Structure formats: C-alpha cells, structure tokens
Length: 82
Length: 347
Image (cartoon, rainbow over the protein chains, first blue to last red):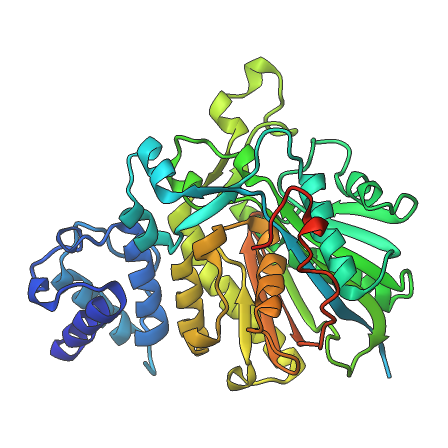
C-alpha cells in the first residue's frame, strides 16, 4: 500500500507538477487542482505504467488520494500476473 | 520490386490571422494559463470571412507540387471536416484552382484521421496502377464550425492546410509509404460530432437546435480513447513493418492536444524528444495537422532523410490509423517562396 502511495505521489509530482508538500492521503484531486480531464490522464497512466486495468470513470475529482491508492491496489490484486 | 507510392513533396498554408489564447479566454471565461496547461496551445490561426477550404487547400497543394518539382498529378484527394459546402465535394474546386481540371478529385471524411485515410487511399490507387501520381491534402477552416462560447472546443481547434505529393516508385526506396493500419468504431460517433445537417437531424427548422449546427466533442472520453487507440494502431503498424519502438526516429502524430501526444509517447515508450509537435503554434487543425506538421518538420530540418517515421492519428467516427515511412530527401522546390502562398503564410 505504501509502495503504491509513493508511486502515486511521484506521478502527481512529476507528471502534473503538483507541489509534494500539498499531497496527503486525505487530499482530494480537486484540492490539488486536478480536474476531470487531468484525472482521465492520471487513470491512463495508472493503466499503462502500474498495469492496473482501471476504467475511465474509476475516480472523480472528489475522491481522495487514499481512495485512488485503494482502487489501484484492488485492481492489481484482481489482475493475475501484475 | 513491388510498386508503391513514394512521398516526393510537402507543402502547407496558414491563414494570416493569429488568435492568441487571451482573445478566446476573454469570451469563454478561461485564461491563457488554463489553456496552456491543459492543451499546450499558445496560439492558432483563423481564416477570415471569404476564405474557403478549397482556397487554403490549393495554397498548400501548390507549395507541395513545387516542392516535388512537378506541375500536375493524376488524382487529388482532400481530407476535410469543413468542406466549402455540404454538396458537392471540395476537392474538384481545389483541383480546378490548381489548374488540374480533368483529374480525379474527391473528398475523404474521417475528421482528424482523414489525412491518413486519404494517404492510404491515394497510395492504394498508385499501387493498383490507377494513378501514377497523387496530391493528398488535409485542409480545415475549423473556426467555421466552432461554437465561440464552447470552451472545450474553441480553445483547441485552428485553421490550416498541409499537403503531400506521391509518385509511383518501389517498396524499398526512401519515402515509400506503408504499411498502413486503419480502424473505426461507429459506436463512438457522438463523441466528436456536428449533429445537425444530415439524415439524423435534418436542416428543417423544427428538426434541430441551433447549437447542434456547431462542432462538439466529449473531451474526456476522446482523451481516453485517443491515447489507447493510437498506441494500439502504432504497435500494429510497427509489427507489420518489423520495426521495434526503439527504431522509430520520429513520431508525427495528430496534434490533438500536447498532453495526448506526451501520454501517447510514454505509453509507447518513445522518448518525448522524438515526437514532433507544433500544436503550440497552430492548435489542433484536425485533418490538416499531420501534413502541416510534416511540412514544417521537413523544412526546419527536424525530419531528416533516412529517418524512420511513424504517423498516427485519431478522430471522429470514431476513426484511427497509422502509417510508416523512411523519410526521403526532398527537393526544396519553391516551398519557401511567399508568392506561392497567396494571402496565406508559411507556418
């Protein structure tokens, strides 16, 4: 879980230029100024780089980072070989 | 050696009026920063009233013919989403403007994938010995169908035209086109659309709402499908030609949105530095975007002879496709001659 959280933080910092100081597990994407278009991009990266087969509407800007990490973990567990 | 279509010239044209983000931001309640961060676009060109797609296409076509060092071709293919009028096609008017009355001329409608569909069609006509040469143009006056109050589209799209000339040659030589990969999915037809004016929503006043005469796009769904479809198509065409991703020297993809281009490059594992982009300067010019980018990249020396080039696009329909070629050595022709471009200007 911590590993996935760290990867998500790294993704938000490197791809979306978000200040790491602002990222907390209970911060929502909206609070990080990640609107729905950015979220689609985030989910595409989760698919291609984390290997987690999430759908385009798997998360909303109102979801927290912790919720997104949970979602990714769930998808990874359900995907054999990932 | 198998007969094949070989790229032998490029050209482009842009209307002179530059529209900066601030001008659109004022009307749509966005800002220069908002537009740049979400699309990578800094400016786009808009045609003035009176300019036609056939005129813009002819200016790009004339530059491409000069670049190829020839005066005529056997067939003219025009990819456009914004024809001069719904009927007839725009290609015959464009051909006549170029002094090519009498040659085969027709439009291809595949929105942002239109140029690649047209290129594949023209290459097929040459391979099948229907024609020995072809002019393939992508041209758009997209500003003519944009809803000025729709922030999701009016900040993205711009006007422009790009063209290439093909001649008959053989499959192994530089510039030989192919293989291609083309695909479609009509279940997504409402994601990118002008809803009114056809048989689904006729132009009888009681049958349509005025907003439906404008272009509309579901940005999030398009982003999602575009990256995955272009990646899948690119892998398919690379498998057909037998190139690994590492062997791609340059990717010129449809300039949909700078973030889509970056995400596509990352998904494929192609370094972003190998992806040519000009979307910051011209916006998304739909069917014109790939030939406009090819002409600019070639003239600026970004595309060099011998480089292995991957072309890929995604657009309304839904449609998507890819093609590969080894970039040829192109004659300079008079492509930089400003007089060629009439009232247009070079990118």
